[in-house]
Image 1 (cartoon, rainbow, N blue to C red):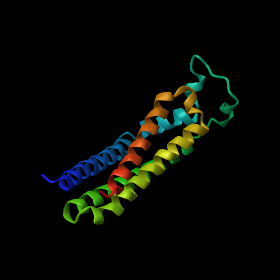
Image 2: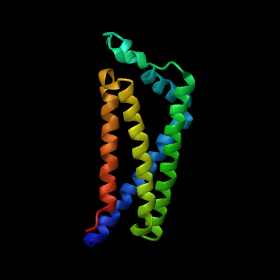
Image 3: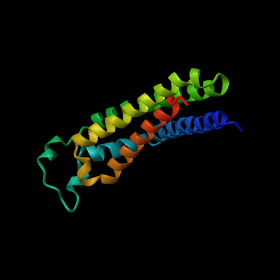
Amino acid sequence: MPLHDTILLFQTVLATGLACWLSIAAINNLHAFHGAVWAIGNTMRMDPLRQDPTVETPLLRRASRSLTLHRLALLVVLALQLAAAIAAWTGVALFVSAGISDALPWLNLALCAMAAFLLLMHIGGLWFGYWIAQESLQTTHLVLLLFTLSLFFLFNARL
Protein backbone atom coordinates (compact mmCIF):
# COMPACT_ATOMS: atom_id res chain seq x y z
CA MET A 1 0.00 0.00 0.00
CA PRO A 2 1.48 3.40 -0.94
CA LEU A 3 2.49 5.79 1.84
CA HIS A 4 -0.02 8.42 0.71
CA ASP A 5 -2.87 5.91 0.98
CA THR A 6 -1.84 4.85 4.48
CA ILE A 7 -1.78 8.50 5.57
CA LEU A 8 -5.27 9.01 4.15
CA LEU A 9 -6.43 5.84 5.92
CA PHE A 10 -4.98 7.10 9.21
CA GLN A 11 -6.68 10.47 8.73
CA THR A 12 -9.98 8.73 7.93
CA VAL A 13 -9.78 6.59 11.05
CA LEU A 14 -9.06 9.65 13.21
CA ALA A 15 -11.78 11.75 11.56
CA THR A 16 -14.28 8.96 12.16
CA GLY A 17 -13.10 8.57 15.75
CA LEU A 18 -13.45 12.32 16.28
CA ALA A 19 -17.00 12.26 14.90
CA CYS A 20 -17.88 9.31 17.15
CA TRP A 21 -16.33 10.94 20.23
CA LEU A 22 -18.14 14.24 19.64
CA SER A 23 -21.42 12.41 19.03
CA ILE A 24 -21.13 10.36 22.20
CA ALA A 25 -20.21 13.46 24.22
CA ALA A 26 -23.30 15.28 22.95
CA ILE A 27 -25.56 12.22 23.39
CA ASN A 28 -24.29 11.72 26.93
CA ASN A 29 -25.02 15.35 27.81
CA LEU A 30 -28.49 15.10 26.26
CA HIS A 31 -29.27 11.74 27.88
CA ALA A 32 -27.96 12.71 31.33
CA PHE A 33 -28.74 16.43 31.14
CA HIS A 34 -29.59 16.82 34.83
CA GLY A 35 -26.46 15.00 35.94
CA ALA A 36 -24.32 17.13 33.65
CA VAL A 37 -25.97 20.29 35.03
CA TRP A 38 -25.14 19.05 38.52
CA ALA A 39 -21.49 18.41 37.52
CA ILE A 40 -21.14 21.88 36.01
CA GLY A 41 -22.93 23.33 39.04
CA ASN A 42 -20.51 21.50 41.31
CA THR A 43 -17.66 23.49 39.77
CA MET A 44 -19.62 26.75 39.52
CA ARG A 45 -20.78 26.48 43.17
CA MET A 46 -17.13 25.74 44.00
CA ASP A 47 -18.24 22.80 46.14
CA PRO A 48 -14.89 20.95 45.89
CA LEU A 49 -13.21 23.88 47.70
CA ARG A 50 -15.63 23.51 50.58
CA GLN A 51 -14.97 19.79 51.09
CA ASP A 52 -12.38 18.59 53.58
CA PRO A 53 -9.75 19.80 53.54
CA THR A 54 -11.49 23.13 53.07
CA VAL A 55 -9.65 25.69 50.98
CA GLU A 56 -10.08 29.26 52.16
CA THR A 57 -9.63 31.59 49.24
CA PRO A 58 -11.08 34.93 48.22
CA LEU A 59 -12.10 33.25 44.96
CA LEU A 60 -15.02 31.65 46.81
CA ARG A 61 -16.88 34.95 46.30
CA ARG A 62 -17.23 33.94 42.65
CA ALA A 63 -19.35 30.88 43.45
CA SER A 64 -22.60 30.71 41.52
CA ARG A 65 -25.59 28.87 42.94
CA SER A 66 -27.84 29.81 40.03
CA LEU A 67 -29.30 26.67 38.51
CA THR A 68 -30.26 28.79 35.50
CA LEU A 69 -26.60 29.69 34.90
CA HIS A 70 -25.56 26.06 35.34
CA ARG A 71 -28.12 24.99 32.73
CA LEU A 72 -27.12 27.81 30.40
CA ALA A 73 -23.46 26.81 30.64
CA LEU A 74 -24.33 23.24 29.69
CA LEU A 75 -26.58 24.38 26.86
CA VAL A 76 -23.74 26.43 25.36
CA VAL A 77 -21.34 23.47 25.61
CA LEU A 78 -24.00 21.12 24.22
CA ALA A 79 -24.72 23.42 21.26
CA LEU A 80 -21.01 23.50 20.43
CA GLN A 81 -20.75 19.72 20.83
CA LEU A 82 -23.69 19.15 18.49
CA ALA A 83 -22.30 21.61 15.92
CA ALA A 84 -18.91 19.89 16.16
CA ALA A 85 -20.42 16.42 15.75
CA ILE A 86 -22.49 17.45 12.72
CA ALA A 87 -19.48 19.14 11.12
CA ALA A 88 -17.27 16.12 11.84
CA TRP A 89 -19.73 13.64 10.32
CA THR A 90 -20.11 15.90 7.28
CA GLY A 91 -16.31 15.93 7.00
CA VAL A 92 -16.11 12.15 7.28
CA ALA A 93 -18.77 11.71 4.57
CA LEU A 94 -16.93 14.12 2.28
CA PHE A 95 -13.58 12.51 3.08
CA VAL A 96 -14.85 9.11 1.98
CA SER A 97 -16.75 10.36 -1.08
CA ALA A 98 -14.65 13.26 -2.36
CA GLY A 99 -11.32 13.32 -0.53
CA ILE A 100 -9.48 15.34 2.07
CA SER A 101 -9.63 18.68 0.28
CA ASP A 102 -13.45 18.72 0.35
CA ALA A 103 -13.58 17.33 3.88
CA LEU A 104 -10.98 19.63 5.42
CA PRO A 105 -13.16 22.74 5.92
CA TRP A 106 -15.75 20.64 7.76
CA LEU A 107 -13.18 18.83 9.89
CA ASN A 108 -11.57 22.17 10.76
CA LEU A 109 -15.01 23.54 11.68
CA ALA A 110 -15.58 20.54 13.94
CA LEU A 111 -12.20 21.09 15.60
CA CYS A 112 -12.96 24.80 15.97
CA ALA A 113 -16.23 24.05 17.78
CA MET A 114 -14.45 21.45 19.91
CA ALA A 115 -11.70 23.91 20.82
CA ALA A 116 -14.38 26.48 21.65
CA PHE A 117 -16.21 24.28 24.15
CA LEU A 118 -12.95 23.08 25.67
CA LEU A 119 -11.69 26.65 26.05
CA LEU A 120 -15.01 27.61 27.65
CA MET A 121 -14.46 24.79 30.15
CA HIS A 122 -10.90 26.03 30.79
CA ILE A 123 -12.02 29.64 31.23
CA GLY A 124 -14.94 28.66 33.45
CA GLY A 125 -12.73 26.32 35.43
CA LEU A 126 -10.11 29.02 35.88
CA TRP A 127 -12.75 31.52 37.01
CA PHE A 128 -14.18 29.06 39.56
CA GLY A 129 -10.78 27.84 40.77
CA TYR A 130 -11.01 24.23 39.60
CA TRP A 131 -7.25 23.92 39.45
CA ILE A 132 -7.25 24.02 43.27
CA ALA A 133 -9.38 20.95 43.97
CA GLN A 134 -10.27 19.42 40.59
CA GLU A 135 -6.85 18.82 39.08
CA SER A 136 -7.93 15.70 37.19
CA LEU A 137 -10.76 17.60 35.51
CA GLN A 138 -8.39 20.36 34.45
CA THR A 139 -5.91 17.76 33.18
CA THR A 140 -8.66 16.06 31.17
CA HIS A 141 -9.61 19.36 29.54
CA LEU A 142 -5.95 20.11 28.76
CA VAL A 143 -5.38 16.68 27.21
CA LEU A 144 -8.52 17.05 25.08
CA LEU A 145 -7.36 20.45 23.88
CA LEU A 146 -3.95 18.97 22.97
CA PHE A 147 -5.78 16.17 21.14
CA THR A 148 -7.77 18.81 19.24
CA LEU A 149 -4.58 20.65 18.28
CA SER A 150 -2.86 17.46 17.18
CA LEU A 151 -5.83 16.52 14.97
CA PHE A 152 -5.78 19.99 13.42
CA PHE A 153 -2.12 19.60 12.48
CA LEU A 154 -2.64 16.03 11.28
CA PHE A 155 -5.56 16.95 9.03
CA ASN A 156 -3.92 20.10 7.68
CA ALA A 157 -0.38 18.72 7.16
CA ARG A 158 0.73 18.50 3.56
CA LEU A 159 3.26 15.78 2.82
